[in-house]
Length: 246
Length: 252
Image (cartoon, rainbow over all chains, first blue to last red; front, top):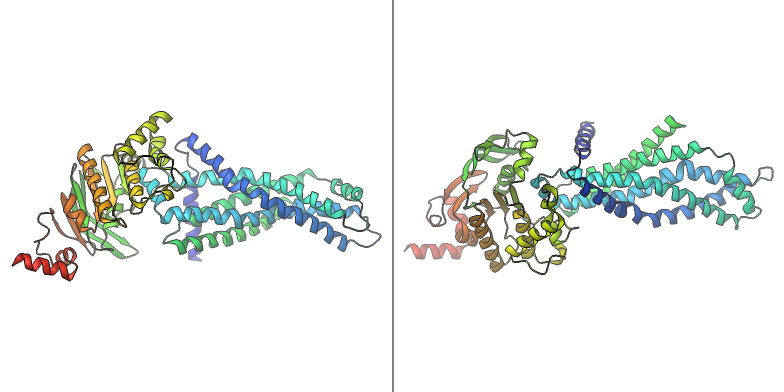
């Protein structure tokens, strides 16, 4: 319990340092653009591949569950859309990104710490926490909702492709299903969740990386801790936000 | 001038520095020597403000670094340059970008002016045709020289070098040592070098402090170091049996 409060306190103090005014806005903007490439654009392919296959699998499973003749087939499209919109594209994609981006952030900062690059920044009088972490958090918060929208769109395309393989389901039924009873708030709900999850993944991973001590072995351990802890916190906040927003 | 006054430092009750007092003068290469784990790096990091002292004071030209607020510390840090044991160059930046980094963060120079200054510093440490290389693409000796170039980019008043020639061959080590000495005299910098290399001690040691288990045991010059009467220092200087034999032969 004491350790829990210790980490909460240290994390809060780190965030206070992170969210201080950048030394040079020009440098901050350049680093943020670089981080969009590092943590965002490089994740597009994996997110799209996973979304395509999950969307297709969702449609096939929906058909399996709703196979009774009295249930209209367009509900397959409807169910696929709701799964992608409400849970998959925000929460599950965030968990995938926690593995990919979280470990990347923690290992990068951890390596910088053990090779004294963070000390070199502090030594020069640069706020190392803000200089290194703020661009990552900013880039990730801005880019994850974009990834989420891509994920929903490609997931629906996956379901559409699967509809060709589903006996008795016409593409017209599927398209009718994905457009029926659409509630724009669900998109806002999904975007809010993805922004919160992006902040959790980037900040928790940065925390573990920034406070790495020792050598290469500890960098690996920090990376693992970053993925595990950020995933657990994402799931916890998923529950809290679902209860609060829906 | 840097004055270290009665500095104590402990980590979770484990005492690392025990009542260290020392003065480091400008224009001189001040060496801190001692075995690995003796507390040299911790002392240097306390002086540089990377560690907080448990008690005692560190004075920069009479100004207490310990009592300064964050803003004052930040200002004085701009007057410091440090060469870390592993170089600590930024992996994602080229050699030139590494040297330009402090200029970009703390000056209003244009890109061309920064580039010109970086090239001047790189030339000063004899680095040519490596501006666009990444730290992983250059040798350890070159990395140390680039680190020195980065450290002097802002014309510092204080230069700290933590084992600048660790992992380097003796010839490259001497080159690095001489470079540090030249720069110290050229710009009248207060330089503190941590080392356990006796070649460095003999080559550049204007003033030497010997630390043993966190305590200052001896202070003097390279000319005095062979006959101090301090057993721990004798054991450090004449570590090998062969060296001890040579010393005894010399005394006879």
